[in-house]
Amino acid sequence: MTQRLTAMELRALIQQTAAYRNAQAILTNEWGSRALANPLFQAPITVADLQFAKDLQAVGVSTVKLDFTDYGAVQRWIAANQQYLTADDRAWLQRPFD
Image: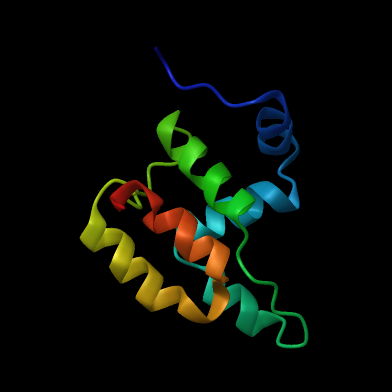
């Protein structure tokens, strides 16, 4: 079975919404630079952002890879972005490896 975006994800992609930009920032490793651009408001990454990034990658919209299935890659990404992650985010990322 092929992976497909949900209707909401497809709409976000077409309209280039904040949710889409958040997912792309995760995949391109630019969340930190976005936070530096606006130091008064540094929103944490959400599980929804991570899921959308994973879905965009799965359908081939983004060629940038964050290997959600590789324990080492996930751990390195968590270490590099820990200041933007909540406990729920870390749990979601690590769940496949429990």
